[in-house]
Image (cartoon, rainbow, N blue to C red; front, side, top):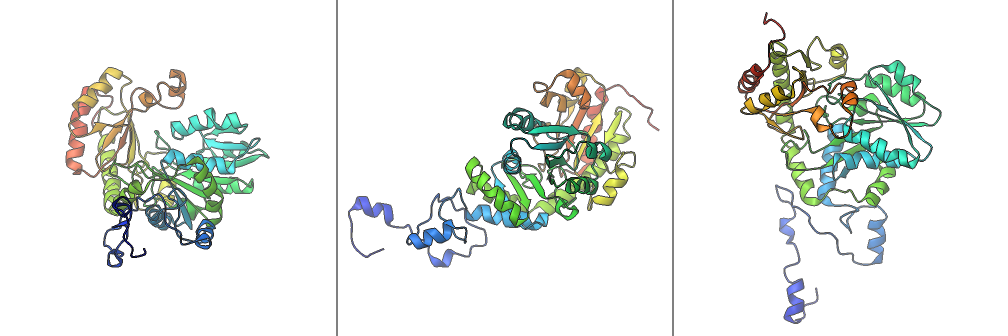
Length: 401
């Protein structure tokens, strides 16, 4: 700035605006809230706006978002990542980029309810056809392929029945048909499986969950090849679903402890599943780490480090007793989210009671007695004790051998 004195009304706008050079390498990254960056001239603007690096407007690029994307790309073993304002924003961005009127999508019948609503309530209005299939049945998946099939969409661990798909087989079928494979890997995280290593084209994460792990950020990510991310980037800009700098900073900080948190959650899940499986009040436990799980061998082959930190289990189909169970828990709380450092439960039938008919909920496996657990990092003895004492509200359904 030219050393010239201006009026106080002007000086108050410019004084103190510079950043001392000695502060450019802090131990903790700064939060770059600025919505715009000063350009020296039109040449610099053209250079930055042409995607050659640098920043000029926060929606197009932001240092905090880029730092978060770099870390996620490393964890997912991908070339590039887009950071979105939620997991659903990430799913919407990816799907709208690669599907057009007249296209066909093969989707797992066991995916997040709001993803199903996105398919049914929005994409079908654009002339996109959706076929839902049990992705645990690869023969049925292969039969669903049409000449206009463009995308296969699935989760690796399903919500809420905790089934596991053979992702290698799905990739083989999809790529033979010339279609992309998109995976919502929120339940697994890259500490359990890196889907890109199995040939998946696009990996989506709700960073809100296990990645951030502190229940204080809503965010999502898309990781893929640089070529595919370059195609999705304009959709992200036009949808306006880029994550803000403060949330990006918080998510980055949350991920720094992901190894400590998630590995503890994986171990706690194994031990809690075994305890629930031995309870006389529990009909069934859905957890891939149990040898009784129908996809235990598959999960053992494709997973590394653990079997996920999500469990569901079945008790009596009694709304009154399930409520009593929730009230009797001392530590564990009922939350409409998952993946936090504290253990929480959810009731899938209640979550989608106003979205699907009672008959459809039962068809989807969401009985009144189905309870889902997101396992946290508490002392496992405290956690098991809390569940065991609360389960006493239910009648015994098996002898305790």
